[in-house]
Length: 345
Image (cartoon, rainbow, N blue to C red):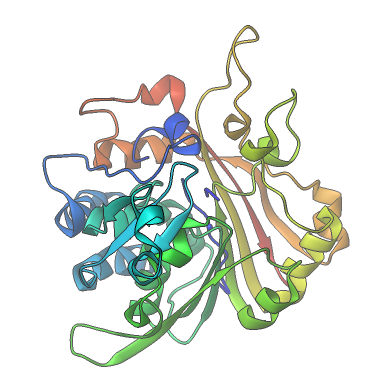
């Protein structure tokens, strides 16, 4: 799901928020002619002038330590079901002909269909200003992580980074041993580790147990949107987010999974709402889906609630080139951001 600890994070195509939620399979994107890791590193250099905190600067700097994936191919059928090369090889020839091969490039591996992992820099800059200084020796949970980029960047900075998602592409895309476990920095030393889980958190007991507790940060980016949980108009259920538990149970699980003093960041980037005569866009409503009273009843101290971050996210979008290229965005009229920041007690 679009998406993405003590962080829970989620994310959705670079510079095209509308297309993100409806993307028909993996897409690649970059603000210039660069692609893959070269594009991500160029984005990091472009964005560093926008940040002031050590947390955000270190996150951008870690892009230099991202490594290319081992070459691999996955396969997809017409219903967008994905399988690994090993699973493909085990199929009868008659079934193989109905599947399309997909080469796993650096773009697909790090951006999937949700765009640059460096868009996480905005919530991290906010957290840095709230006093979060480092990922070293922390636990993070990325709720709806959407791609390996953010968890791997957190791990390069010393985190025990957990990502949870229900997107069926991800366990196939990240099925090799190198994708999880210890992550080494540029000097070859183990910095942190990555754990990627498929399923509903916290409703799936196996997933919740594997994720564990004691998170320093739980970050959800572009997943916990009011429009995904409380659409104002009827919409195809496949476009919504199913928490798997009641909202009260979910919020309580967030609180219980934090260490005392840990943070939850719900950060949402959204397009403009559709006019009344056009189809409803659930991902355009980026408000927090949980009432303030519900959050406080679970034990949270609410530091910020539905705070507008549109001006800053537009500056980030310009640095990433979202307003240029083949499908430039109208940043002033079609790009907005809101966040809710919670503190565990």
